[in-house]
Amino acid sequence: MTIPTHVRWGIIGCGSIATTAIAPAIHWADKNELLAVASRTQERADRKAAEVRAPRAYGAYEAVLADSEIDAVYIGVPTGEHAHWAIEAAMAGKHVLCEKSLALTARDAHAMRAAFAKQNLVLVEAVMVRHHPQWTFVRQLLLAGTLGKVRHVRACLRATLGKPEDHRWSKTLGGGALFDVTCYGVNVARMIIGEEPTRTIARATWASSGVDQSTDAILEFPGGAVAIVHGSLTAPFEQGVVISGDKGRIVLDRPFIPNWDPTEVIVELDGQRQVHPIGGANHFLHMIEHVGRCMLDRTAPLFPAEDGVATVAACDALLAACSAPA
Image (cartoon, rainbow, N blue to C red; front, side, top):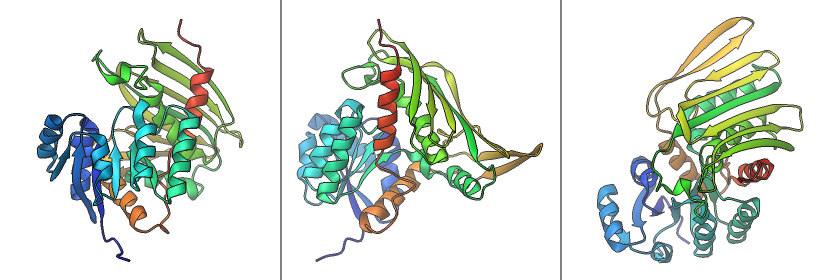
């Protein structure tokens, strides 16, 4: 049996994240290679393949799954289509890096997990922020007990999505703030606290299309910690995370979208403010390299990556807690 030395990738769905972030990261990543892109039409596939320097272009998603030389696929289609194409990829024997949110319901997320477990394949939700050096440093601080017991997490990510035709306004395609931006705060709160929420309270404001345009949520965890999370698609851009513990707090001003720029992790203890500079980084590149290693070496620990099922379950509960649109 030939032992693979690198991961050969295909991309399903040629949206902006796929072409401007994922494809370049695959090219730059050690032991990873971009072989193909797939779109809904051959003309678009040809054009996008030329843009991202992929040698193969497929005008149907099924074609990239049928390519026996492709080991893994990145799924970048709208969220409402993730479960279908991820399960199809598992049945075709492909590892999957799936754009967040992994799915729209806990039921679909668990079905995806089961499909990949059955095939002994890797399924990862593409939450790139988990791989940024600032979050590595935060995890080190928490493991060292710098804050003592974490009591409270506050997270915010919001922006203005002005395009009415964008799929994130479509209920059919799985749009809405919760599964596009609010989920970031839910994800990092789970990572920081290290538990799964046992109680959720939420409210939403609703767009005319039937999706939530903003979400405010409270998540309670079994150890007593509480997270307050906000996300919006109709507000001026803002991001931030504050982690409060028995001994002090940690503040991140650009926790989710740092771009390539240097960032800071601010630690406040005993009335003293310490600013820890973090060098600029490409968290998409770090994610591809980490996930690729896990695909090549199945004994490698998946964390800080994860399959995303628990975040979907939490968001599913939050959506149920929101008042339905009139």
